[in-house]
Length: 310
Image (cartoon, rainbow, N blue to C red; front, top):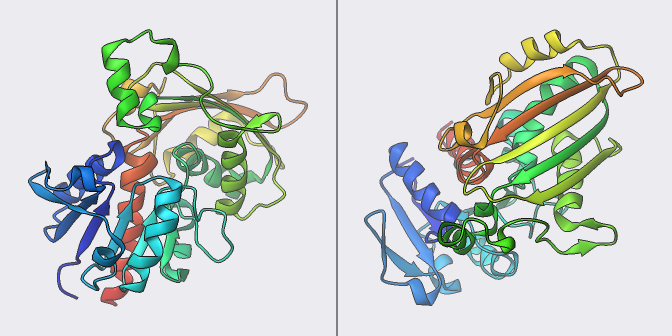
């Protein structure tokens, strides 16, 4: 096929601007950027912002549409892009748990991206790095239980929160829990559990998550405790992760080291002394705007485009 015609919807936001930069870096030239009416006419990465209207997205001149907008906007606009013949790769939670919509991390379940019916969902920015680390360990020894605590940068809440942190680094609104509650857990915690189960196709895997926002601009970090069905030493786990796609083993992962990198940094791999059996602990960090969002979507697009060339 000719050069793919790619649209970034929400291109003025924190994830959208990273997507535009990565697309240029990877050699894509036929790229358009869409956003709300108030942003139309702005210049982003040398491109003029167009208004994201249903008619514009359904015009039939887009092959892949990367959506980085809110859930309600995705529900409104994604069907129009699909109607126009585009494959929509959506970053919001609108379609992630919808039956029949693939939820994809290319290093984990990339083949599922090819089973789409016009829409592929891009997972939560903590679920992506978590499953990159969990999948190879599951293949080696079987996962019995997972517990995770996340420390999430303010960029996960959008560009405005990043600006607020730059203005006032110790602003109390930049820390704590800023997600809505679903009973006794946050929506973010339930997302991580449900999405990881779907991606790894382990619907009965016990997963418990605890999430918190921290005063860091970019880079989510996660402490992970796992129990495996079969014995797996820390040294064996480290060897497995060193060979895992998308993963880089380091001594001590930090958000600073992960910033602007494509890899999920994993380290501090050790036996869990509190586990009754087969317990491991690890720590990971990932750029939530790159691999945790924009890059993962682009990798999904590349899987789909590669199939179109066959």
